[in-house]
Length: 510
Ligand SMILES: [Zn+2]
Ligand SMILES: [Zn+2]
Image 1 (cartoon, rainbow, N blue to C red):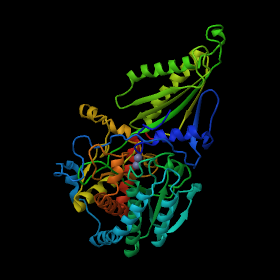
Image 2 (cartoon, rainbow, N blue to C red):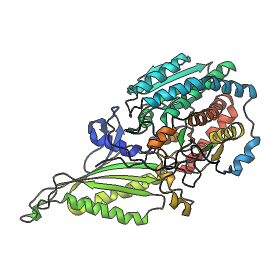
Image 3 (cartoon, helix red, strand yellow):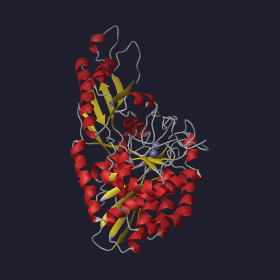
């Protein structure tokens, strides 16, 4: 079976599962027995394989920013953002420092982006990107730690001005997809992070503001959950906030501050006993029966779950023949919900189906849970600051629904506008970071071809264009201004913290 059709950072979960099943030793059990085994990501080795299907991820409402468009699509900013336009911006001289720094970096960052694009590397194999990005940060005065946190292709760079300042965190992704290269545009994410970090550092120095910038090179967004590994290794502990951005299809010069979904992968194994299916079936314990009962139970459960929940899975086994009672069956399931609290509850109900199937068949069952991908909690204060800058300075439009991207669920979303099913589909490990510290992860539009959204060969071409680079630089400017304000403006940081605490109550705090 192939795990090649799962969306993740548009496709991560399938790869993560594939990796686990290809190399079980990379995963550490923290429980055991005949019930549920929770896994923590312990491995750093890339075993991503297979062919990625070209999922259609586009704006879906006919509003994509199309390469060579006949004309820009119409778009209206949400009222609340327009009315917030009087919100005070940073001093003009600070803005000028950040913008001129990024103007100077434009060509070097473009070169770096194209180098990464022309040499795509898979998850945990981003050695070339690791080298050129760490060299770049060192050239710009950052203290660099290569092979950070025990991960061969993770890196850490920091720059401190004065004492007692706050800490801005930034993520740069680097990995590509098998066969189709940088079809998720992580070459653009890479330079966005570098640009934010260097621009903020330059402004701290120029304006004598105490603070620290930490940028992480985060491997394996497309398979392996690099940021989840880094989270568990305390890589984000020092940060007060964390910023990054992701390209997608969408309306001209648009960006989304919307949330995304949460997902939990499960691997289930039923173990029974073989017997001759005709001569002595009473001696057997039928693991295939257990799998079928579980599959049916989940199908029944599906009728009583919320419309924005999803449960989907497959069954497989070894050495099955019709005249032998099967003694093994394996299932792989993915459970999705809008947030961590609902995901946890739904996952428990699904696990109950497996346990019930084991009881009815007399088989043993082992349920392994992969690290959950959590929903993206966009900090409202950071989102407002970014949005106002993006709108007022860079002529962007901002939407707050799930994303600038969507999937073939789009037609459903038109009918169930409250649900936004595509929010469930998108997964970003920045979601896990956003549960720990205030975060912002805009999804911004780059020009794409029809049916050429993320994870298509066409998107790989889009990620190479000058227009995509220009869009990335605008988002970089907006995030750099936002990040600097976190370090510079104590009252704004209080607001960011307040929004983070408020969100804890909204999401059902853990
Ligand atoms: Zn991606
Ligand atoms: Zn992706």
